Length: 173
Image (cartoon, rainbow, N blue to C red; front, side, top):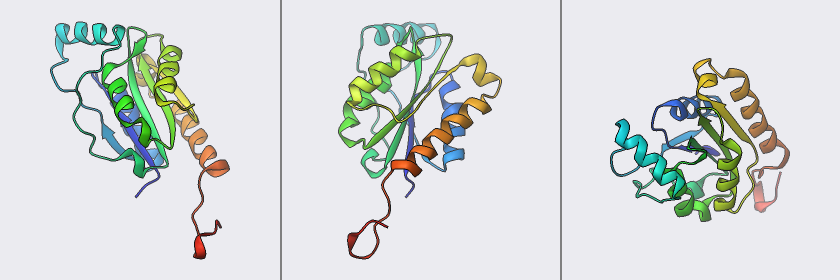
């Protein structure tokens, strides 16, 4: 079992690209948050906007992985109309009792990361150990520097204060 789970939702593919890059670099497991129902095309885009603005919690498919089995859950979301995406809102509300530690990342057209991260932290009831906000243009350019810095922050936090393996007799090493 790995220590880190990357859980994300992606409608257009930007958040998926970042999630896959993070998973490779962190050697993490990945679980896509899948919404029930259609979200493609112009009607899907409008539906996403209304759900995000209305703080709707749509039905999602059951996660393949159990967040409680991980020390860190990195949650990725697109920003929809300066707000948290509705499928990620549902995931957090359904799974938050299973999060030990969290980190957040988002992709967006131009802005809205701060509001999305504040909402995610409030819903989780936890402050993130690190955050990463990327515009779609930055993702298209590769985002290697920003993703690398985020990975280093996650690894640094793990080394500085994460749980340690227990030795014989249950004592920390």
